[in-house]
Image (cartoon, rainbow, N blue to C red; front, side):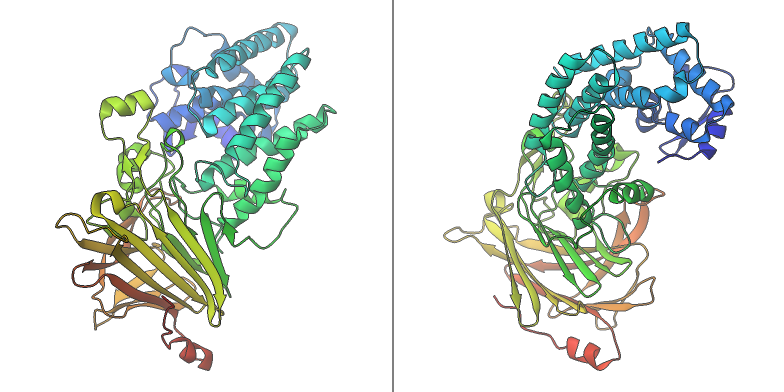
Amino acid sequence: TADATRAAEIYAGRFVFAGKIVTCHGRSIFDLEPPSEDWEVALLGFGWLRHLRAADTALTRANARSLVDDWISNPARKRPLERRPDVLARRVISLLSQAPLVLGDTDGKFYRKYLRGLTREIRYLRYAMLDIADGVPRLQVLIALCYASLCLANQARHIRSATRRLSDELQRQIMPDGGHISRNPGALVELLSDLLPLRQTFAARNIAPPPALLNAIDRMMPMLRFFRHGDGSFALFNGMSNAPSDLVATLLAYDDTHGVPMANMPHTGFQRLDAGTTTVIMDTGPPPPPNISQEAHAGCLSFELSSGPSRIVINCGMPSTGRDNWRTFARSTVAHSTLTYHDTSSCQFVELSAMKRLLQGAPVVSGPANVESYREAVADGDLLTTSHDGYLARFGVLHRRVLMISQDGGRLDGEDTVSPAPGVRIKGAETDFALRFHLHPAVKASRLSDARGVMLVLPSRDVWTFEALDDKVDLEDSVFLAGNDGPRRTAQIVIRQDSRHASSIRWSFVRSSTSASGTTARRKPELPL
């Protein structure tokens, strides 16, 4: 997706990326100090060339040519980020796909210079495969090498090898249900925005796209729908931040199925409950393998709840820029709408700075190994029974969560239980636990006078009530990290309990209504245990 108005900004020497502005004042943009890593990644990826192409005037073509010439003419510049494999891959794809813009009305001298510079970048990219982080960056490099082999002449040998390696990696990284092995919904958006044009590029060269590419796209598209709430935003799991709505709309235009999202994604480990206009999306899987878990969150059994176009319960998510400031908090269990035992995360992350540098991040070193989920249709709606053992090794307890959604979607009942595993005693003296429900910033929350519930007014003017049967309910500050305009203050519902006194908490979200159907919905059904 491109914005022609941004071409004028770039021509005027204003480069706006990742919420930061840098003005050139006649100097080379590549010689200036970047204000943030995210800004520099956007600059060196050259994706901004698409905005110049969208304007498509003689002036923007000349501007694009001069900026690319500036970059190619100074290979001696040493910017550590320019050789990062994912940045290099993005730059190669941008320079290939925007070649018509840059080479449209140029002379042979610049044409040869451009190809030499591009060939140099592709050579670096082939070397980058030797030392690259697993997951999305590895796929991005293979996709870029595939583009290079298809777009440049005399590459028949490279087409075969690049296609084979990409096919193998897609089969390894894209699960049978269409999820990515990182369990981050954002990975699907990133990868599809490169894989869909790649499919077109094969067709443009009259080469049959590899079956693994077609199969991966066909599996990923329904998964994209699975993670979406009624307002079009994505559920915030495992590093997901705000997804650009224009990009998502463009991707979904290529979805041939247009079906209702599936209810269960067993390989990636997520469940979705749809009833009426109410949606619940829940994390029911273990963390990804350590080598791919640098962004994974300790959010096992957390869920998000939305009613029509309004999100009610969320996870805090991840900011789209400036992630380092928030990463430790955002990945912890307290940043998710689930149960936290003794303020401890259900996953443990690498803590030592030296190890983080060596491993290029803080992967998960331990977490839930056995996550169970079982769903069934019952007389009053759908019942989902889940459990995880993330607290078993340290505290000797299991967390069990049961959710039931009514057929009309007007009521969600839940019960969270902390209990010792069969034949295991609770370890240590710490027996406190807390239940958190983070609320979307657009929800206005006020605690009821009996301190057992909270009234929630949605932007649509719908009113929902949260109630706890036997426990005191607190309303505390929280933060919504995945907003369009950066982190925003919000609220969270918190219930604190001690497993020596009570091992379970029963709660419900009920849509308030004066109609007869609303009155019957307020009767509290017993949850099957």
